[in-house]
Image 1: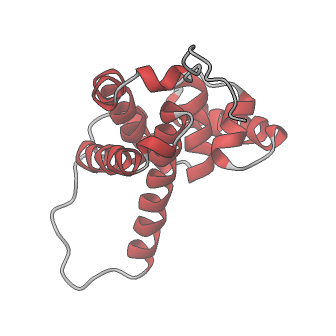
Image 2: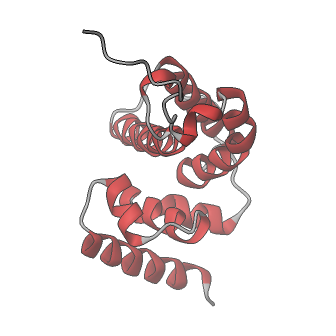
Length: 162
C-alpha cells in the first residue's frame, strides 16, 4: 500500500528564499571592507572577496548558511594572502614592483599586527562579532580571542597615542 501524499509543501530553510544576487548586493561592500582591514590593500581585498563569492556560488545548493560561509571564506582568504606575503618577504624575488604607499597611520599600525591579533581586532570592533564568533572563525578558544584582543589593542594604543 502506498503512503498518502501530503498536500502541504515541505518547509524550506530561510536561506532558500535568498538568491545569490541578493546576498552579493547585500554583502559585497561589507566583505570588501573586512578584507581591506585585514590585508591593507583595496585591490587584494576586492580580489579575495570575489574569490569568496565564486567559491560560495559553486557550492550554493549545499551551503546551509551562505553568509557565514562567505565570511569564513573571506577570513581564510585573508589569512592565506598574509601567509603568502610573509613567505615573499622572507624570500624576496629579484625584481620588485612599486611599493604600495599607505597614508593612513591606523591602517599601517593595524597591518603591522600579527595576523590573529589583527583578525580578532577587526572582527570584534569593525564587524561587531562576539568572542565566540571570532573564536569559531579563527579556530581558537574564546580565551585566546580575549588574549589576542588585549595584546592587539595594547599595541594599537602604544603606536597611536602620543
